[in-house]
Length: 125
Image (cartoon, rainbow, N blue to C red; front, top):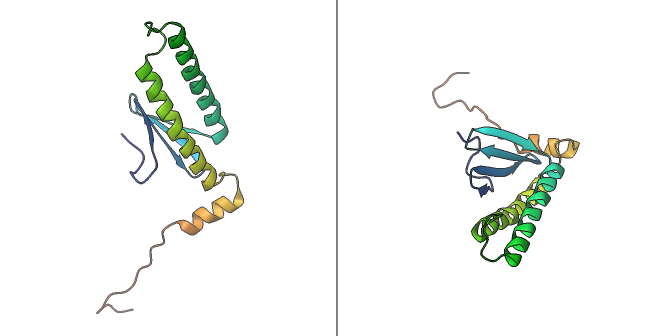
């Protein structure tokens, strides 16, 4: 089950779908249909850990070219592409503004769609 629509800028990595919404980072795991909401700061901490995994994986492959026990090169490339996409999502979340910011909340209310009922022809008021 996916909780998002297709208009969002998505980052996909294996079973994870990640997008920015209302200044927060949303993560959906298709393995167990779990859903998590993270702040930009917490997401950056997790991205740093993944970046360290990439760095360590490359260092391991340089020292042991035939040993894929830590990470294979295609896994490293996939994770690097995901991290690159996440940079754009972090930027998008920052542009949306923090949910704690009053101006971001006012802007959200202003952008919400409004339904106006207009009486049709032949109807009485």
